[in-house]
Image 1 (cartoon, rainbow, N blue to C red):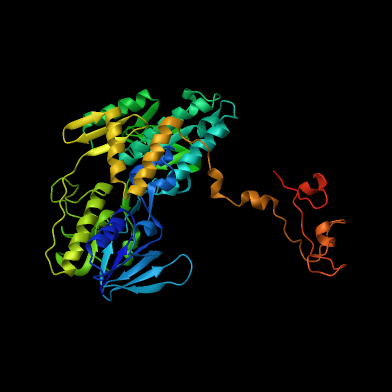
Image 2: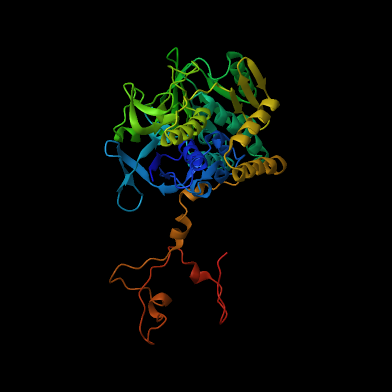
Amino acid sequence: MPKILVVGGGYAGFYTAWKLEKHLRQGEAEVVMVDPLPYMTYQPFLPEVAAGSIEPRHAVVSHRRHLKSTRVVTAKVTAVDHATRTATITPEVGEPWQETYDQIVMTAGAVSRTFPIPGVADEAIGLKTIEEAAAIRDKVLTNFAKAANLPAGPERDRLLTVVVVGGGFAGIEVFAELRSFVSDLLGSYPQIAFEDTHFHLVEAMGRIMPEVSLETSHWVLQNLAERGATVHLETQLASAVGGVCQLKAKDDSIETIASDLIIWTAGVMANPMVKGTDFPLEPRGRITVQPDLRIVDDGTVVPDAWACGDVAAVPDLTGGGVGGMCVPNAQHAVRQAKQLAKNLVAVLRNEATVDYKHENLGAVAGLGVGIGVFQSGKFAMKGFLAWGAHRGYHGLAMPSWERKIRVVTDWVTGFFLGRDIASLDDRETPRAAFEAWASRPKPAGEAAPAGDAAATTPAAGQPAGAAGPAYATPAEDVSKSAEPVPAGGSATAE
């Protein structure tokens, strides 16, 4: 039977495979999905993950748990030769191999788009992955714990300063959610006052959140200002070397802000892996497709090839897209994937395809617990009702009831019990504690210290008098000061 290869397991890839399972008859086609991650990340929840409102694992959807008949391959697709219908699959461990296919769906998604600004690559962190969101949360908590032990001064200010670059939806949401998170944290840190915390958002344009009306964006600016957050409009980040942000305003004036947490949300670009394919690309690096989501090369359909989501330049038939194309967001990616799955099945059955057309339902954003905005056409909601609409919409949009229940449970327990404020920053180096005390073999030929039991006691199974190998002891050998152990007993360090 024909094999359908889905390249990418984000929004578009996951939903394409999920809906193909629904629409295909038994034995009609084999579906293979390849992605280097074993899960799909529900990206609208990343700001809430960063602010401790949602458990990180609950904002992702396991491929293998929810795709029942799809063959899931956790690896990278590093090249596609559509002329021969083969893709190069490169796993993290093991040798690459060639995977043949009959139909291919390109849904590799997008990555953070950055500019060659000094220091950004070394100091900043993005907000495209669940790992980044969790790391931001841990960084805020760790910095609070450090700052609580310091006197007022530049180092304390640096630890309590957050800089976000980019005033789109992602930037404003994480900026506002973190402001809300930090305000809640102050109750647990009496050493830190509200005035000690500093929030700065940098936006090169003259406004924020272009998806909403100018009036609504002004309300958001006013709300953020009332909460002690500063938005720098018509300002660019000129340098971030050493965590020192140099902000260049329109009048060429420079403001310097030192921060230990710089979050980059200034746009995305198509996954660069598409350059390793023989598919046609438009100037922004996206694959060109026609409205029914089949790949086209200068108006000619490329047989057996499809694309959707952030990696594809999909014509916006409503006339509302930027440059005539659908904007790269979750709303379009999910709906394109659903239509692509139907069209692909239609082609397999020699039926007609349907063009993708979606009228924008509006925009909704959470700005911290109890605060949000909603915009649909000229209608706008602000404050608590909009926040409820935000959670209601995304709670329903989260795929599968299992995931919905976990997320809603996080919200309910957070409402009654508050956010969990324990930092797990050390999970970045989980072996550090073990390595600090692990004994290591001494260099060959070096004698063990006199009386070293490890060097003189026979190992199990050795004859009496046979000495075991010499072992190095930690710099501070706790065994020398430990209490004697009764016969037959054991010592446990606590």
